[in-house]
Amino acid sequence: LLDLEWEEAMSTKELKSLLQQVKYCYGANRRASHPVSLVFSGMQPGSETHARLSKQSGFEAWDVKTLAGPYIDFFPQERLVYLTADSQEVLQCFDQDKVYIIGGIVDRNRLKGCTMKKALTQ
Image (cartoon, rainbow, N blue to C red; front, side, top):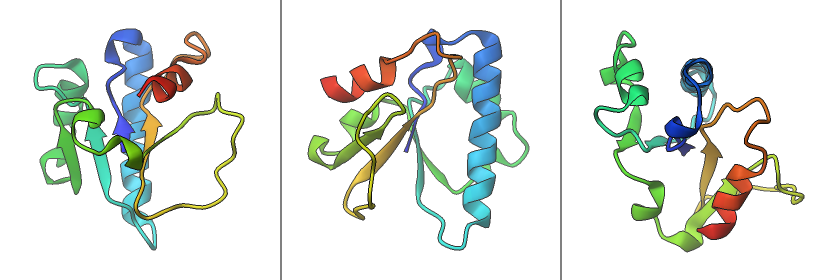
């Protein structure tokens, strides 16, 4: 799951960089020998993120699930694992029953710790 709920915290340049990374992630997943089910949360209609991704040629045919709201409203909290570079814990293996979240934020270390804080509060 890509947590795209960070739009307001990013500059236009950072958002553009994030969207490049989202496209790369989608392409890499498509080419993977064992692709995962991708989910984009926080894809609110009318948001800049939604508008820019929708402009991508073929986006409507992407094999992703989009959630207009936050992921916390769609998945049981006990299944959520927020992957953050700010954690001291190292993930040793994947549990197929868990939902792994990658923070969709490009901040050039300007917002250090914000994904960890979100992970701990949810």
